[in-house]
Image 1 (tube, rainbow, N blue to C red):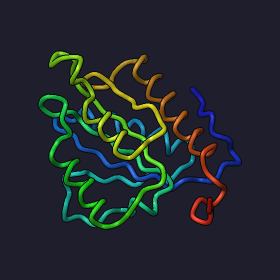
Image 2 (image 1 turned 60 degrees about the horizontal axis):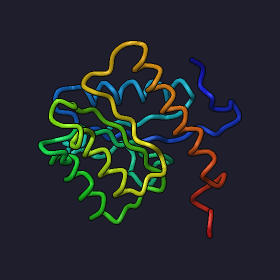
Image 3 (image 1 turned 60 degrees about the vertical axis):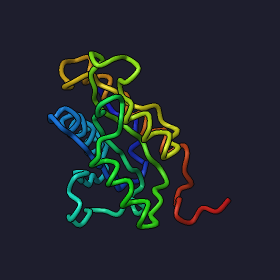
Length: 170
């Protein structure tokens, strides 16, 4: 599937931050990162639980922040992602454009499925629909869904921002 991103669109600096327990969300993030790179964007990666690591790109310097998380007990956001968000809030950095993805399992109850993803989306006021994959992403159906979501986020990012969003004033 070809990306719908225009060749004339400027390359974005994208920060992907992932919290993954079993590797499912990490793999989903890698697939999204690959799609972003195919579209010509610079992708920077950070694991949420690497508290002492220097971030490869500050969240407020990123053109787009993609957050990936698994969902903990009872639909909660896992501790490592909560800590990452708290460090971000404490730093005074405010990302302008955020989209959220994640993995989960409906066996623990449909009402809890993707709870962390929904909480993060609300917290950051993301206009993008979340991407949720049950367990490990695999097969053509997941690949198609991941490509479509990534392309939509990239396309919508271009439609929601000024050509130089750091100079845009209301």
